[in-house]
Length: 320
Image (cartoon, rainbow, N blue to C red; front, side):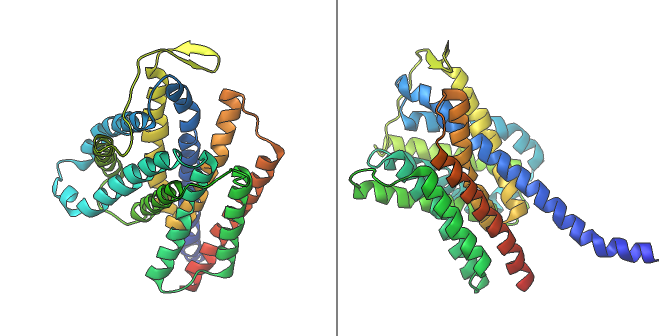
């Protein structure tokens, strides 16, 4: 009897530990795979591809790869798609298309580092949304972690001295932040639709939205078939594009959805900040772009802030 009582007492703790382990593993792997996109997209962009062309093929390929297992998981329950049309539309249009289209439009007017910083301010919108839903402000540990994490991101990106600021770039960056926030908030919703089905259909919707944006002239859609130079070797154009579709999109979005489901939108969005660190690391390994001491220090500060947010969220949940 005593052993049964002890097992019943420890079971919720063990369950929460498993949830956290799965969530952190998925979220970090998602950030790592998302972080490869810059290194693999760079040779394509240098060979004549437009950012819009790369993103459209990337999301479209990911949608096709995930669609088969997604439809198998659906098992003919087509009604579920109709029941979830609102989150699917929000995920595809805002979390997929708007975030990426807006980011690439932003970098046309402001430096890339500032554009990334503007996009990741969407995590502040996530915290604000959660606070409104709970009708309670986050605790001081969560708020402190937010400030520290964003401070670390600023140090890594070093937006100081970037020159003149174009208001059009700021506007596009702000819209990218909204798209990112919607991505995390929608992904955290409990759903009866299978995860792979949700991500596959959502990315398909995002692909269509990006094509529409390109046809409307919001961003150019150009492709090229010339060989590209990557890691000192010449290779066909479709090799880096395959990585972008299979790893930096299909795996990244599927793992990201799993991570948000287990961690919640607030913690997962801050773990997502590590994408910047992974991007720096991949650029170092694949392109020889060595990170400086400032980036390493900023990365440590960012990770400290993420850990504080995780700890603060645990305290906030216990207080509810």
